[in-house]
Length: 165
Image 1 (cartoon, helix red, strand yellow):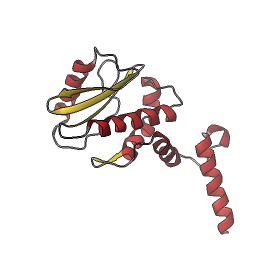
Image 2: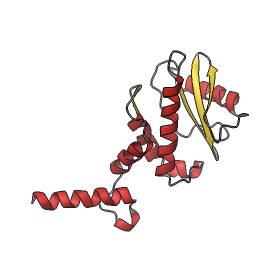
Image 3: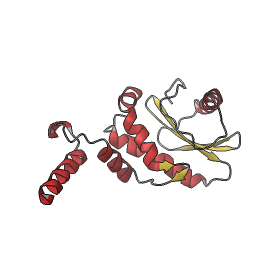
């Protein structure tokens, strides 16, 4: 969410909120409950409507991960920290709304790499960012416009092709 409570990117893995309007109402309620806190350096935790909510703020973005009240808070916190750090790596430390919207595809890929169908797959930010970067490689782009990991992936692909010929 942004600093005004508007949705930037979201993924739901349960049917607790069946309609889009119920999801938006839940998001607005969570935002209202957490907006006056200062979760900039460390993640904060709260309970809301039988859900554990772990959140962290960066500039004009608010990051939230929720789970049922029977979930482990440390695991949810690890998911949030992995997502937060991976987004920071992918956006090269410039984590703000404008940059997030310009790279929304990378953020959604991050979510897909972390959780699949409600099951946590990965929490290491470096692994997540590496997988996302390798998915988003445009091997036709000039090397000067690629990140280091993308350039290495492109080089590896070209080397593999030349060895298999």
